[in-house]
Amino acid sequence: MSAPSLTNALQLLEDICEQRITTYFAGKAFSIETFQDDGRWTDARSALQLPDEFSNTELLLLLIALAPHARPGFYEAIITRLFPQGGEFTEMGGAKGLQHRGMLPTGETALFILAGMDLEHRLKIQQLFSEEGWIGKFGLLQVEPMKEGEPAMSGRLLVDEDWLEKLLLGREASPVFSAEFPARRIATAMTWNDLVLHPQTLEQVHDIRLWMEHRDKVQADAVLARKIKPGFRVLFYGPAGTGKTLTATLIGKEFNLPVYRIDLSQVVSKYIGETEKHLEWVFTRAVRKNWILFFDEADALFGKRTNVQSAHDKYANQEVAYLLQRIEDYEGLLILASNFKGNIDDAFLRRFHSIIHFPMPNANERMRLWQGSIPASLQPEPSIDWMKLASAYEITGAGILNVMHYAALRSFSRHENTLHESDLVEGIRKEFRKEEKGF
Image (cartoon, rainbow, N blue to C red):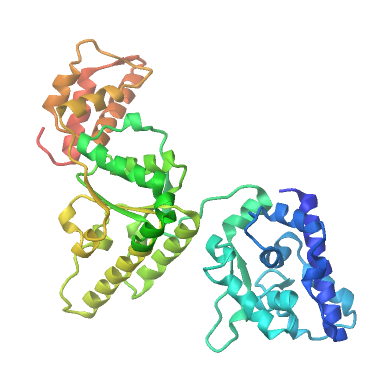
């Protein structure tokens, strides 16, 4: 962001504020259109990094919210200059923060600057906050919800933190994982060549990639857009370690979209309504940012509903009902992963576009996994028969990586550059012991 551009943009806002206040107290009419030919609008659009779809009114609304973040005391300086004797100025709105000692703009502040006290114009400005407007669609700004009985527009103007950080610091950070935001971004350094799947599984994964590539055309079609809901919902099921999480991250990597895994231990709450509240934070942000959502071990949230025998059953079923509605309305890619398809409620299964089985790899697939996992810095013993190893031990791709990691560490500890078969077999023994399987 150019500092001179932002300086010019804030000066434009300052001049408009002064004109609005002075004409209001003088009983004269004022229209922001008088600034229409001012060259500083270009600077404002550049500073806020906004596309051409945003009107000058929407641009100014965002600038009103941004001002105290860029220049503390912005509004106090204007009011003090115009009213050196002080006094109440309720028409301007504004609120005090917990730490910030200056005035924070509220919805009323924006209404006054943009529309004065013209009721019809003020109502039009309020519509800019709806989901139909560009500000709502991009999720850049909202009015802080107020307690019941207080005017809705008296809430503070809350700027999207990601957009604000990108604007002021030139980068957009990932949201911090917490109980309130129970999702973590996941990524991988691997490529599609590292993923070994059954041919039928791979073909179904390709269908997801087709949707990712052509979904805009579907929504642009007059017939399809009217009859088909946006979004794509998929269930991955199969044993742990068969590539479900890796597949999700590779799809995100291919299409340059963040993938967020929902941490179910943080989501599920014993308190009524808390589960829905935690998930709503994730869904709301994901819609604005076009994230891929990945629910691992989805049985905990999307499991079969029970007969209502207690209050707990009643509210658990309410959570399922909430999830049904939320995943159906989600416009992006949503992936659920489970070890067993039968654990998922039938109501969810009916809403999936695709149900993909990730089976245990067969001997040929295991051989490819073994050979693809050989460390670049180690030379395998010539006597290792990879096909024999793959045929003898039924193990997942994740298990093979664990075994190779163990064998590599054993070689490094001996200061050798040879990968020994005995270390591989011992690694397999440890994996089987972990899973309580007979060796």
